[in-house]
Image 1: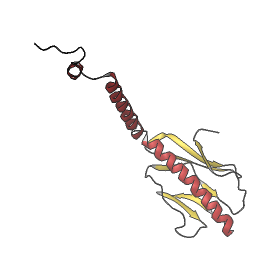
Image 2: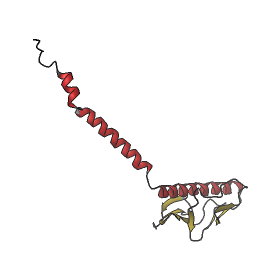
Image 3: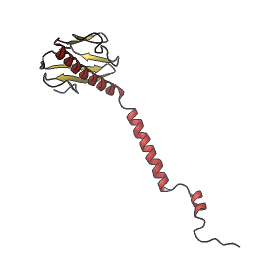
Image 4: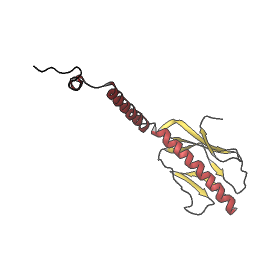
Length: 154
């Protein structure tokens, strides 16, 4: 009869015993990373869309101000059905539509964007018809660039 040395059956008992703690920790870490990825992917898309729209509009206002200062021609921004318009810039120099069909301006909004380097205090409040409780302001004090702030901020 053959006897085995102590500890020689470690591999056979390990294979029949299940997973090691290290293997379980790796699987839990992978699940946690996947869950975090899914939660970021499912972020409130309406709020994200509205923020993107507001940042874009602030950049367009600054571009229009720069064009007005360089040309000496006043630029006026106002809303149109389904979009907006910049008067005083060359045709097709700036976009004239929203990124999303649900974006809308709250209240009346007409802005004068130059050609003076200092303009009066101005603001536009935008919202989304898909999330009516949320709004963002794109505002300037006339000296600083347009910035995006929460709709209910002073």
